[in-house]
Length: 271
Image 1 (cartoon, rainbow, N blue to C red):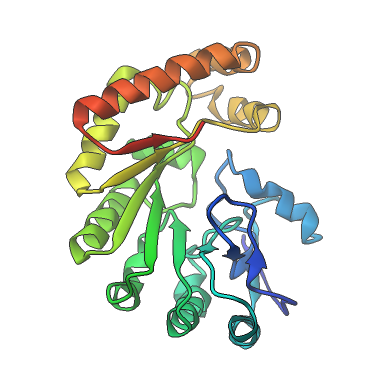
Image 2 (image 1 turned 180 degrees about the vertical axis):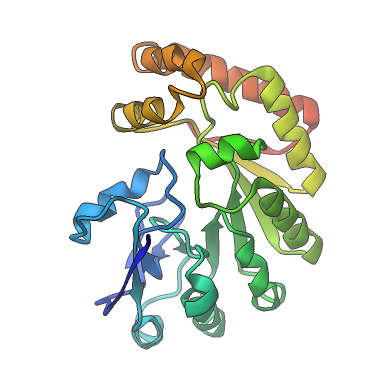
């Protein structure tokens, strides 16, 4: 069950800590996608929720009012939409806050990038295709939807995401794939990476960003609890991941570089 609450935000266009981004916008607090590796679970405590992460979403119902005031007062700068909650999670279909934010940003000449796992972003192609100061980054961590269901239980299917990347690229919208986190045991082998990068290449995407699994002390126990019954052979790898992290990362980086170069794909490793 998802708990939905309407809230009044004090600000919408907030300072960003992401390199290259001046501001961030999160139309929602909490995320229904329930990804077990999510770094944004700290928002549970920040927002005062007692519910389990993935079971609540706060809707910032005054987004339009606040953002319209802020874009008039603040100097234009690059905006990242969706830094701690997917801006196109299912509730966006009804509430349309992300679409409203895009309309306001484009009307006021603010450049922006959208981060999402959802094909719902394609609904707003009509707003994006004529605006040359925007980009879309779609996260894909595996091309096996069985694994996706394990790690990202309520997120969009992999097929839909790959189709969305192609649709955006074909429309001429700057589109990147965020391959992260690379999932140890599930998407880090040479054979898995070869298939994944083939699938990426087929979309026509021009740029791929890759990140490793982070926050190991917090996330590894959660992942082990989720995989131990279906993938017991993967448990030992995760148990050793923290102890042998530096060695693992070095091997993974070289493996990704080799595959990316063989596919002639513009790939940026950010770890």
